[in-house]
Image (cartoon, rainbow, N blue to C red; front, side, top):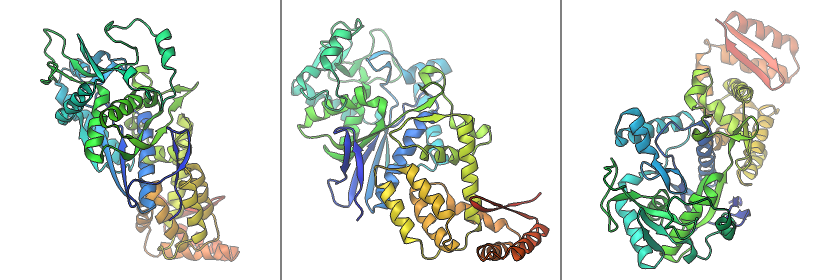
Length: 461
């Protein structure tokens, strides 16, 4: 088996991947807070995580991927202040919080499907795991890691000595630079809420009884409770965006390891931002977000955006512009056109397959993998061999290359044979025959164009 190397945020270096169980991988993905449509910056993270999962499967691992849906408890500020995002949107739209969560969860699933992101093995909702979250908080309370304030029960970060190990935070600096806390009963600015008490004389739509009073779970506790339920107290991989490092994932580690006394996760992987213009990240709070539907409405194939994401390493920022997504769509269309002319897959190209495997196993180097794809497409290898290797590569790429081949059935009867004969004539430098076959295809309504990446065709009309 080819060695697989992943950049572990915990150690800040590439490490050889060695799962807990030789043939199985447990993987947790931080999912959406379902109060609005996912924007394409969010979706870049899910494409990266899908690529990771596909590469693990490409290496013959059986992957159990768990993704959470935050349908309660994510306040407008990560500092445990403001309104619950789902309830706030419910008020704005005049619907129930449950309706808002259900609607945007479904829209999120539809976006993943359009991007060829494989559905997780388990998609788990915070509201369906209240019991597990309460039990985890009770363990932390029993071990002395919590304290109660007027607005909820908090995790005492001073009791967990390795609190800063993931984010490499200056904890003392947080004290000096902290703004005035809205809850003066917090012992330290980094302390975070485990269970938020409902405001007095206010009836929330989503609230539950607990040993500490009626309320709802904090944002961080859900991921620890659900990941450990389905993957165990220690599991292989946890992923998310880089913005999760200093708060959400740092807090997950603290509460999980405080509760179990065991290492929580072996490999932490984080995807970088999608940025606009002057290095400005895309975010709903900034009001600058673009949805996948926006791209579709402008005539783009959703998989063109997936292709665009493959052109940048997941740990590098990706600059988005309409020109860049247009270039990605052009490249994808060219690839589809080429694949549509290839013969039935037979024996692949071993050299290219080895190089592709080495690229993707080097911390998911998809830009390099794409270079190898195009080198193969433009090579002198038989088209049946190219197609056989591309079929394998698409297990990772997820670009629907088989569909492109299927669409060649739209060619008039006999046209595919002429295209194949023309390709052989060009390789033999028999330009006269090549031109003759081009003219014959034209009479059948098939326009052929030769370019630097090879031959493309389209149906006229």
